[in-house]
Image (cartoon, rainbow, N blue to C red):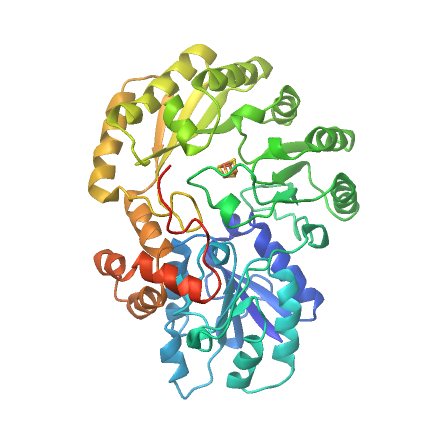
Length: 479
Ligand code: SF4
């Protein structure tokens, strides 16, 4: 049974996503001929066998991030497959079955409902067994979809419209999941690195973040599993580094034992991002001795009070203290993540980002990169109902910030795209109507204004409730 797995980004980025490692391995172990496709460099030919996409009767999109929905729809159209589900349903020709899974399905799967025949909700490796059983049973397309709709974590938009079903986002026991990379991909952005999952879900409940509301309960892989995974990987592959996949490495209660174990095995360790308040000397030592010259932390804002409202309980003094420690241990640069357009944020608070970066530069001597992105209110977070700043205001805030940082030597500003944030906001609140609109108009060009008009968050919330997928925080806003 050939199955195309599509990742809506470059191969290098896709190979750094553990979800695609897991689903590929699950399908292969079930005897499915899964092959990978990436948006680039060769979008319509599989990585494994250079086979054209039209040979695959089943296509699964791995969708992590809201703008990926648009990339997926466009890729389908360019591959000669109608992105709009209704258009495929009315077509007399044989057409592939289109499914999707991935991180977006934990937050709001509705942006995919106008595109996909079925959507796997949440952790997909166990549901994959059911999917393969149904597909193997040789039913017609309609019977296959009816059978899939019987699973509580498979959303079949054409059949779940009747309001009789209650869906559940699957949250597996992660000690039963694979836990580590399927490949050590040479060309990945994490070269020569074994990806290792430590924890899913986060207990910290920052008001802007989906990790607590959508991905919890917190599930932790114990040290015996981690050690087994490292040793098994050492037996079959060559790698020099272990990339820890977890919301915040300092929250992982066995982190010191894991760092000792990796050191014993001669492997360095890398962390995606470090939370300032639980960053220990041991973690910093592991990072710097592994050749990590850049320390990445996320203060979110330069203002202690606003940071506290966001849910992050540390001060600028804590940022200086930890980065000074990093500089003493041999780090040469720091990357600081910030957001602008936060609820209630003043212009002074935006400028506090520049002041914090300048102070870090002066006090630690580290080269500083300020990576700034707009705040996007997401479903499933306490700030879901907050106002999105919008293009005009964001432009003003970004230019204010870049003026404040202008001329500060040793500090670079890296600003995320405002247009992309607008699309992210519109898609994050999209329901079935907006999803069909994306699918129908993706080739001719999507009007952001129209997409925003159709992404009615109240209706989306009602639809998610009807499906049993609403979050307690979806409509609550504010601190
Ligand atoms: S921002 Fe970090 S600490 Fe806060 S909830 Fe998200 S993952 Fe957890």
